[in-house]
Image: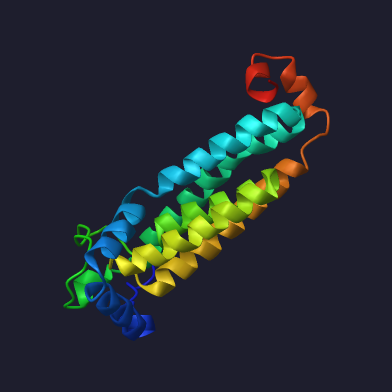
Length: 200
């Protein structure tokens, strides 16, 4: 294992600035950001469902690509979780005396990199392979998710940046690998019990 990372020395001043801005913002804005930070990942699940539903109408090839999106997201989450255990960076609320919008996570719930950012950006990149429009929408939502995690005080900016980069990279690798599967695979799978998932 690596020595525990001290995030304060990386971008502590920027984190303090964002958290202080949140403390002086209108309550309605803080409330919206807090809700998005806590529950916004559901939007990515919805976008994945929409992408798959539309892809089924385009054919088995497109549907198989859409079905790979959740796998890419899970792979990104797994990679992010392993890196968390290696780096073991404490949450910023452990090292800085700041009142944050979200309660400080329990000890051992490491900060680097951000799971939320990894999942969100993995979904955005993977969805881009399915639909450019959905990918762009997901990318905007991913940016908002990453920003919200700093705003509510549970992550340093570098946690979010690292999670975003890791999630995007893993998703790109997974989706590229899926695009290089044998061309006849979707057709063969359409003749199995998986047909309902591949064609409408």
